[in-house]
Image (cartoon, rainbow, N blue to C red; front, top):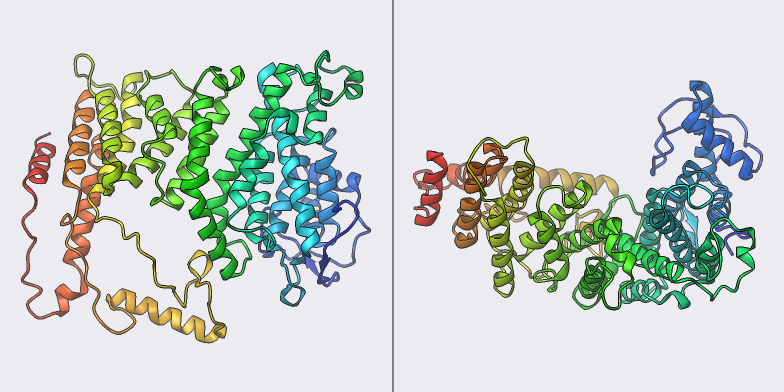
Length: 573
């Protein structure tokens, strides 16, 4: 139990602990002040005072002292049990206190290790039981924070005693779960997503007792009232329809938040993880994309946009935050594994396009932003893929129709219709830019012996740092000269030779129409042309054009007539 035990840690020298920014993860120092002696063991009161002083004190010296103490706390053996204990019993925590403790868990999990012989001064050592205990603690903790937020959203501010935890707390706990999943050696990398979906996708009756008890205590039990002190004495399996719906909705929100963070966490440079484990988890996540992730996202999309029909709770129809999380998760997985089928066509993409095509003001701005991101990721990943072409064509045709002028053409930069066209133009410009590029190479990539972070080879051999740095500099010079590791000149592909001309011209025409209708600036409408021009400049200035015999006399090859037509139309306007 992390409340009573502490992972072993290589002790830091307590005589000189420098102050640095609380948000730092690498322990880099930012001031010259030092602690000359180890402070006494912290308790809840001391930690709360330090957090309050750091964020609310008007005294600069007091804030600096609090920052210094909190840095010592994060590096001490007390950070794990105290942070978890406060988050478990978060009934009286302020938003700042909950956010600090959740952030601390994410930072600590990014720096922990599995083997004692590999430990560093700032890295805790977790055994097999520690990893399992941490997972068993964090999963219901995230659900507990989410259900409090859901109840406040459904009932309105002030309807439930206490302060609603900010959504950033759930984000930080979800980041901690993502880091745990990436690093936990006894969590099968092929089962991570399936386990998470199975845990958070259950009915309210199968939810963790801590979550059900929280809902009952806040008035979500059958026959209970918000704020009633006797709520805790009710049977935990007697949830009201509202309470049961809140539990299910909160579980879906947790799953979406964690799914949105997993791809970024496994590719982050800041996480301390063995290249072999990173590669294995990345492969496991890619395998789960088509089998688990996209089907789960589509099922949630149907529920979130169903308005309470069928098997879905009625409150889901108004869950704007859930819809935003849905698009964030969908875009994260499209970017992480664009080859995986399921994103286009799909219910997530359909919902995003429907949101963008709706009259301006129909949806909240944050949901529109998320829909732009989600639609862009799915449609860009669909370019150059024949099996998705029909769905891609239907989506961009709907966006083109919505961006056309519905009345007399006039300047609409500040009008509602113009703002809607501008958001649609962002998606069309991204699709056009991708269509101007060559098809993706979906084959396996050769491991990079000098790669770092997500690019590090799974079987990377140890290289002394001096030799590694020298090899990296030599590669950088070779890249500048345009040659590979064998001294051969790298060929730069002629732009537009393998472009998807049909999609490219369709989007260019749609952007031109949107610009003429008003609301879309010339810079936005001509953005794909800027990318095409940059590609031509790169090809023109390639090393082979300057060094190879006879290459300098080669001009641009003839462009496709359809592209020439689009260029002429853009020039005329």
